[in-house]
Every structure is written in structure tokens, then in C-alpha cells.
Amino acid sequence: MQVQTFTDQMGRQVEIPFPPQRIVSLVPSQTELLFDLGLGERAVGITKFCVHPQVWFRSKTRVGGTKQLRMETIAALRPDLIIGNKEENERLQIEQLAAHYPVWMSDVRDLSSALQMIRELGRMTGKATEAISIAENIQSGFDDLAVAVAQQPRLRAAYFIWREPWMAAGSDTFIDEMLRWAGFENAFAHLPRYPELSLEQLAAAEPDCVLLSSEPYPFREKHLLEISRLCSKAAIRLVDGELFSWYGSRLAQSPAYLAALREARCRK
Image (cartoon, rainbow, N blue to C red; front, side, top):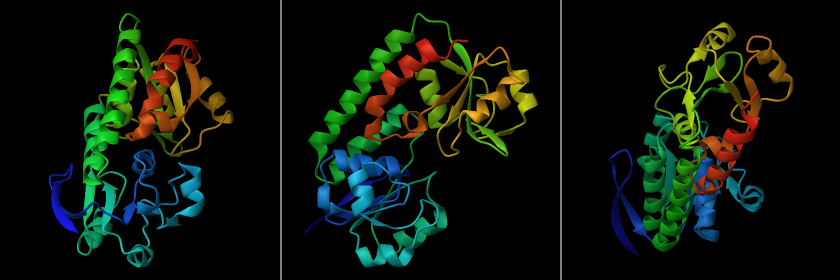
């Protein structure tokens, strides 16, 4: 089998048997992408959080969580390619794996880098044509979204990912990027990454809408009342966290969802 060298999104040179036949994915959104690229039996390992597609979740070997990998399980799979992500996986575990296997790392902060990741995964797995088609479809959807929201007033939004402590999406996050595409102004874009906040700070920010994500914290209807006591003028909504933060092929579904959310659900 021929060995080819690819550069990952962290600037690392990775030598990969081409095309790889035993792929382990350590990132849920990238696992789903592998499925949509048509890699079938070539994907041999996924994490316990890789819930899409369900057929893989039920049948593929699970190698632990994204930040708590089971090294012995991965070793038993004899991978010739491991796919990870800078933010979602732990550096020390990735370094340990990279000492034994080809490990390609993504670093996705915006739509552009997400589309680059999709194209690169397609190229290194011998599915370049399929990946280009997926990327072009996603880009087209977001271009249409930009046109749809261009003439609408920007709503000030606070997006929460966690409770106790309350944590919001700040700057330099993929969620912040999705908020901008949907025509929102992130109320906490002046803060780095995922700041911890008090509900008093939320009230002081005076958002037009507060978005409570379905992941990683599973916000429910009961949490809406907790927020509404302090933000009586804001629209408070539960939102699908996968469509805000999964940066693989699921992005094809995001533009329509974001447009509907912006137009109908985020007005008081």
C-alpha cells in the first residue's frame, strides 16, 4: 500500500497508508462525515458520543469518550488512521496515540475551516469527489442564509452550553460563527471562548434572546423559567446544539434551521 503525506489543520505532517482501511474517529461530527463519505466498513472505531448515524453507534466498536479514550481498545483495532480534533480531544492522549499511529487533527473555528476539514478528510480517504460535493452543498446553503438575513435587524443573543456554572459561547468559537451567519450579535463576543457567567451578568447584557443548547448540557423546558425571571423581555428558546456546533456533514442541515430560528422562534 502506498504511503502519502498529508498536513493536518494543526500544521502537522502525517504519513498515511493510502487509502486507509482501518479508521478510528474520535470526534462525533467527523464520524458522521465518514459515514456520509461512504466509508462503510473502513471505519472501525468511534467514541461513545458518536450517536450519528445510529447504525454505526449500535455496531461500531466504541473507544471511550472524546476526552477519556481507551488506549487498549484502540490498539486492538489496529488503526491505520485516527482522526481527532484540537478542542475535543486531550493533547496528552493524542500525543500518546501519535507515537504509534497516523493521527490527523482538525482545528475548526469557522465555516471556512470546517469546509477545509471536509475536503481534506475526503482527499486522504480516497473520497475527494464526494467530499467536494458535500462542501459545495453546505457553502450554497450558507450563502442562501446570508441573503435571507441580510435585510433583517441583528438580534442580540446569548448562547449557553452549560449550567452550574453557567457557561456561554464567547469569541473564537464555532458557535459564535454560526450565530453571526444566522444574523445574531453574540452578547458575549467580547469574552474569550467559553466564559463562566452569573445570571446577573446575563441580565445586564440585555439580550433579545437567550438560547439554551441541547448539548453538552441537556437544557430542558424547566430551565426556561429560571432565565425568564431575570430576562423578562428576552425570548428564551431551547435549541439543537448539534446544528450549532457539529462541523461535519450535518452542517448541510444548519442553514434552514438557523433561518427558521432567527425568523420565527427568537422573537418575544
